[in-house]
Image (cartoon, rainbow, N blue to C red; front, side):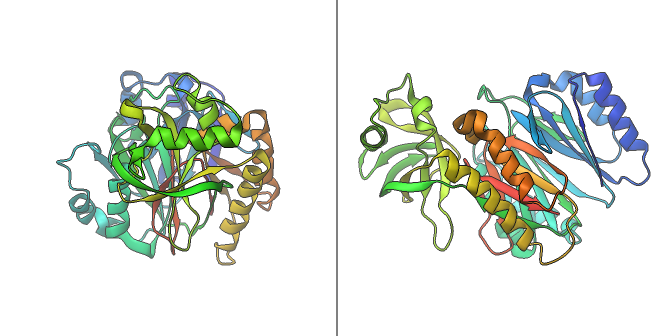
Length: 372
């Protein structure tokens, strides 16, 4: 496998590099990860992507990771030596789209695959339904890894890379023949709960235990932090206090509250359903960094003793906002526990993973490691 980081936002250089991979007979498929600050648009990227005959997939993210550094400009190209099964699904947010029907149409094309890369527009609706349909139709035969593409501005725009161009409200499913081990950890711990979600609408938690969600959340967070939280300083404080959806026999699934909504509701990254039970969580920099190391160890163990070639690293951009300068410690923790393998990946708006034994989930504030 050939992997490169290019420290440039110039589309001319991107076009030239993709041409190299296109003309390399050993490469059958291409993964492209790019930074939002490159300011790529459908207008300047579509002609390049449409000129590529080999299967290409990926996304645009707030930042990308290559070995021991995160980068806010540039792009990563990875060339696979085996053929890739690849489809993209459009209109993710449309209630008229039946994801089960879409998956049934394409599932047979992935019969040779062992690992699925899944990238989705992280600011679209119905991500949970999309993920559930993948798992329902494809099942536990595969490992899954991926995340939400998009911008930290939280302005939705084209961000999914396909052979037909840069797409919004879209997802790609790429099946590769490589074995993998997956590790998923977050390092957040409960301080209060559980609370029943008595009213929710997609990504909006409206009520907890029949009370306005922000009123419940505000009381717990202020008592724990000693700080007053309001709509003006909300995320500065809330980034240390995510929700955790309770699941049987697995870590809580984290949901990141972004801002307050109408009628004292809370708007999250990722859907929260009415009837869920959630805790309010917190953590510190040490617990988050430690969790990254545990995710790597878990991924390597889950590789079932086969030789390892590289690490694919998906991490939530909101962990960077929480860790700030100490994010370098998290990167170092990943590197020091990975048997000196090459590392690359992206900082995402939500993370997608399971490990052939758990339900496929859309996570927030979580480290996902793939060992290939």
